[in-house]
Amino acid sequence: MDKRFYSLFNLGEDQAIALLDTPQDQISEDDSRYIAASQLVNFSTERSIHALIRAVQQTDPAMENRIVRRKSVETLGRLQAVQALPVIYTCLSDEDCYTVENAVWAIGEIGTQDPTILEAVAQLLDKPGQTYRVIIHTLAKLGYQPALDRIRRFTTSTDLPTASAAITTICRFTRDYSQMGQVVGMLQHSNVLARRLSIQDLIDAQYYDAIPEIARCPVSLVFRLRGIRMLAEAGIAAGTIVFATLQPYLEQTLRDHPNDLGMVHSYDQPPALPFLVRELYETDFGRCYLATKTILDHYAEAAPAMLFATYAEEANNDYGAHFHVIKLFGWLKHAPAYDLLIEALHNRQPQFQKSRAAAAIALGELGDRRAIPALQACLDTKIWDLKYAALMVLEQFGDLSSYEKVTPDDDWSVREKAATKLNVKR
Amino acid sequence: MKSVVTTVIASADAAGRFPSTSDLESVQGSIQRATARLEAAEKLSANLDQVATEAYNACIKKYPYLNNAGEANSTDTFKSKCARDIKHYMRLIQYCLVVGGTGPLDEWGIAGQREVYRALGLPTAPYVEALSFARNRGCAPRDMSAQALTEYNALLDYAINSLS
Image 1: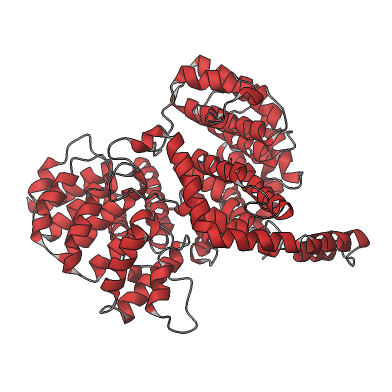
Image 2: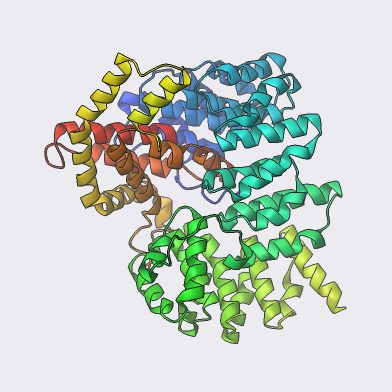
């Protein structure tokens, strides 16, 4: 689990507990019980857990309190607080569907085989207005087979992520994976959430065959990398797959060229460059990749000036567009962007983290060997995708000296990458 | 896209009946509030960047961590803030005001998004805080009429409620 954002609030355990225990009407304008409930995820202590349980027991239906209850339930789940199960169980009958959703999810995180709790979760499938996908996930995770037929009804749900979860769970329960093609098919759906969330189902089903399709799915590479890595970790541990099988897909995804993606959108007529640059700000990355591809195919000459302009104006603050602009400068092999790419490579702000590996790849495309020391320095960070991308680019530059720098405590994929290369060298 | 009209027709369809009087009354109620909603949408549209930036500033102020060396709010180059996500939610709210229903937020901002936030360990608190700031900041008649503000605030509440 990425914990980059966990310490966002700079709030100690004592302070957070005191805040959480303060009645809502006595909270000052600058304080937030909601933040306190989030922050306690950093403190897996009896005191924190009991404070969170007390917060869940505060049932004032006002929105300010309701959101605190939900967050407290979620945090108890993250802390895997078994002692909180009885109070979380009571939330299953709450009128607020998001409280129910969080309670179901928390039960899945904590884990239980108590048939009363599991049946109560399963019965929510018959209750209108619930988040069925999360319910199905929890039942699958806890292996509650008696819910099989009730889950089967959702395989044809018009809500695609719910159908995806149901199909996957039926396959897992019956060990008949013949229908998983439907879930793989969602990787190319026009609905961005269907694409993103089907990756989670493929991970849950340990459906290794989908790795090549995940690599081609037009969503942010964060989702693709997460999917490929989680499948790889499970598959390698089980002895089902080896690193060499997935390495090309992992590297294709880190490289992230739009030509390696299956596009799900299209233009009815060739758009003008300003429109395409605007598309780089979209939250559906499928649209951003299509715009990138179109810029490369039709506006390679004119694009750099406009990319610099949009970077100065807005993209420097927008972590989505920032990423795509960095990538484009690389694919365009635009040498004057060198300084900007070096700056992006060193950018330590958490929301721009994925732009760092992107900058490494882009610097490789520029082919400017001045970047070698900066790329070598990336190997001292803790960010696996940045290290991996740096190794890929250093290899491109013919510099294998840094492979020796990879240490045993590095990320497994980085170690594997280095080992593969060093073996070849020998 | 869901709107009050499509929702009413779909639920009547599903029950195999024509829309009832009370269905039509709910459509009518929504249409009567359309002027206020469109006023709110228009005012929000004129100030969307400002509202989003102000809300983002408020949450930066609340999270001192972001001001630490190397973090989101510390360098000159990146001094102006990343208001991308807040802007996204504001745009969805604006769209909801226009269609007269919560469809845009439901489909693009909430369904599945809660799972993504949980799975990636992304914090929802900054969004909740920023949107709450926007919720408390709106003022009638300075920013818009009282009725328009009611419509706008209802959607902010809806977003805050469903993100948390």
